[in-house]
Image 1 (cartoon, rainbow, N blue to C red):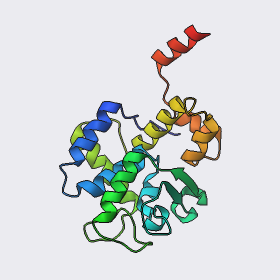
Image 2 (image 1 turned 90 degrees about the vertical axis):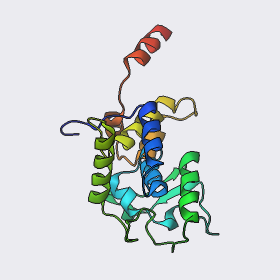
Image 3 (image 1 turned 30 degrees about the horizontal axis):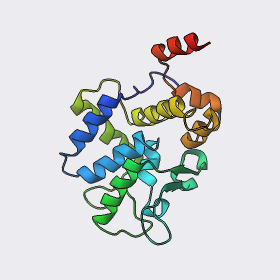
Image 4 (image 1 turned 180 degrees about the vertical axis):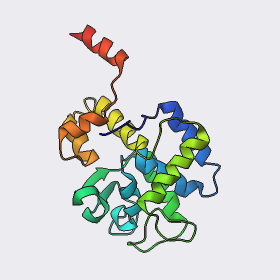
Length: 193
């Protein structure tokens, strides 16, 4: 990736963001926006383009998968992502606030219309500026998701190929660029050898 990469969020920073979003005017929507980034690894464009049909079951309930359609992804690379419990809970709460048509955007402005990718990027920029998180951007949640998934994939019995597919990357090399290294983990790993 050219230039500086967005910072990976710590667990404390994630908690701080979620606490802060609980006090915002559109707290439920804002929480879903943030969790789509940090707990599903979605890009700004994907957050802007996700519709209710991509998260609802055939019976109209929030499901346990996000089915990103090609039109919502980079390079028309649709994918399915198992839904994090915290994200699912936030989506259930948002959905309960007003039933929307299946093709209505999950993330919408005060006027009830969908946001653009640039609006999502600006929203994250303002959020991190307010909280004083230097070097964080709309991509921070995505990098956090990929880094955390890579660190825990072995516990789930998976491989980095699974992380690659969840992130929607075409190559494992791209996924590797998202993963932040950890010197403490490296020390523990070397001592296991």
